[in-house]
Amino acid sequence: ELQRKALAGRETQLGARHPATLGSINNLALVLKQQGKLDEAEELQRKALAGRETQLGADHPETLTSISHLAVVLQQKGKLDEAEELQRTALAGRETQLGADHPKTLESISHLAVVLEEQGKLDEAEELQRKALAGRETQLGADHPETLQSISHLAVVLEKLGKLDEAEGLHRRALEGKESQLGPQHPDTLTSVHNLAVLLQKQGKLEEAEQLYRRSLNGRESQLGFGHPDTLRSVFNLADLLEAKGSFMEAGQLYVRHLQGLEELHGPNHALTQRSRSNLERFQREHGPVG
Image (cartoon, rainbow, N blue to C red; front, top):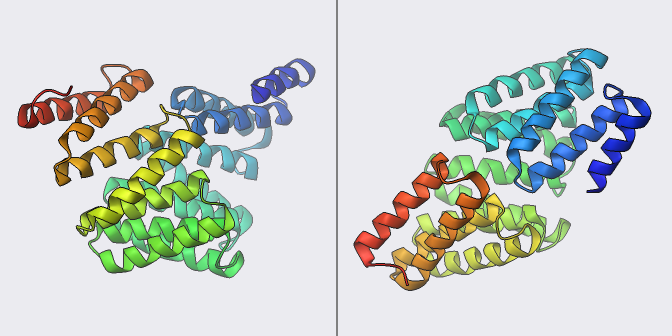
């Protein structure tokens, strides 16, 4: 609400294309992304980017920031090819304008690697995440939040490559650092809690995984809200683990909640909603109707 008021005031006082107005558009889009309102966030990031390209030029650092921010939203919406293209553009621009070791350049390396990981291009993703991590350790220090993010991202890639022991060590290191630097309830800390739980489930360590899933779910409900995409991810993963353990009643209730959350977030016809509905139907075929 405050960001919307700031934007309205700047549009009135300064005009729609003023750099400060474009900054307010960008800031509002970031808030909406955090809230999981990705369609409006995308619309505003495209508006901010178009304005900055016109007012500041294609290679200006703020324009490159808008390119990167838009790419992150598109990645979260599953538009991975456009996200990759934009992150490569942002990275090339930042390397030229800021240098290879600048924190913003290292951010672009990490963001690009995350997109590549989601596309299944795991070898390049691992190479880039190791590069980003090494740069951040040197430039920012071992316990800086961005360094800890790189540790988390590298761990996820290694997990997908089947390097589970190294991945577990990195997940635990990231979680310990985030608890110390950000606090136990910070959304980034809760992401590390969730990621470690996913890995432990793959390793068959179900008791610790369940404990961590419950912690991530409770924390995300408190910090992000019941309908946030990250909260719903925790709902689904806890349900999946409980089904594997034979706790069918609670698992079924969580699958229902997951479907209802996605219907509210995306509508009944979205691919994620349809996938959740199909999974619930499978569960009920195998285990009976959910009470």
